[in-house]
Image 1 (cartoon, rainbow, N blue to C red):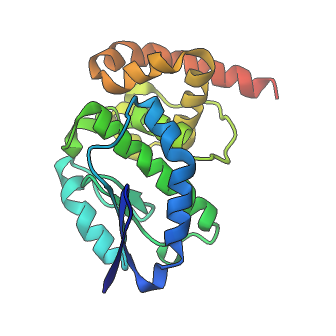
Image 2: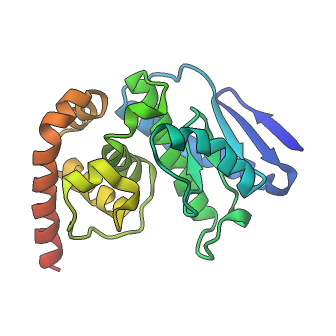
Image 3: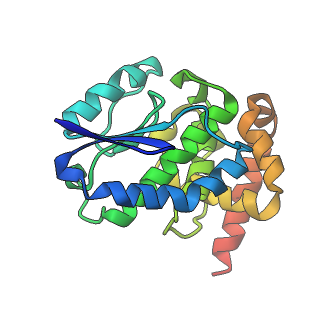
Length: 225
């Protein structure tokens, strides 16, 4: 049976088994939420953020499947969090099949998903289909604004076409997204990156060029090490 914890900003649903996460969730979001919202020029969110800590993998899977079907995608075992239904859905640490996943990873993940929530509100979008073609750029922002990311910059070896058409199946996809973000935030003003985030036409026009530049930048960065 699920418990509910509600604050001025959040509604958290959780199992008694995962009660220990509640304080961590609030600290995690309070420490980063203002910075994330400022990037997206949001003074406040339109409603309280609902956070669901699922009590079973099956329940989490069944919740996400209809949205994956909408975008002709499929459930994968590495999926542990999403915002496809407009809420932050999370698997607790105890259900994640990764011995390295701990409270630090859990905190990174919830900040990551909070970026997606803010991005959706900045774009005033509700349907999951809206973000599928530019998934790669959503992950560029989430890995740089939300995660306290442990990975190093890596040389980008894929193509923009593969990222746009099949992000979930690109090797090192999130590392690539993080690297592209590092390039963007080092070389462009935040206002310009924000414009790309909310204007899909602008992203379509500039995305390929920015990707190629990030690819060259990443190779130069890693070559010098």
